[in-house]
Amino acid sequence: MQKEQIQQWTYSLDKENQDLILIKLTFSENLEKITEFVIIYLTMIDNKPKEVVKFDGSEKEALHKHKNYEKKKEKLFQNKPINYETIEEITNYIEKNWRMLKVSYIENK
Image (cartoon, rainbow, N blue to C red):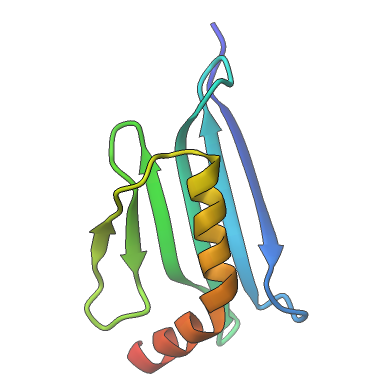
């Protein structure tokens, strides 16, 4: 019996490596589909990593977004499938908006 396969990586959004995207994918035993994923935008504040926004979902729980950059922390469910296109859409969103998200996080912490 095979176990689920997990792949995880990070990449930097800035030259100083203070702003990162972390992606973790879990695949089915036969590697045919993504069964779970997590995408997190992390920033360093006072030499500590802070989770600004997180998207996660699985076969058991629908895709949702944790808006840690707002005063009222919420978990918003997204009406999107768990697949490569959604992962690309989320990472593109973070890449385009990370500066604004970081400012909001700092202002509301």
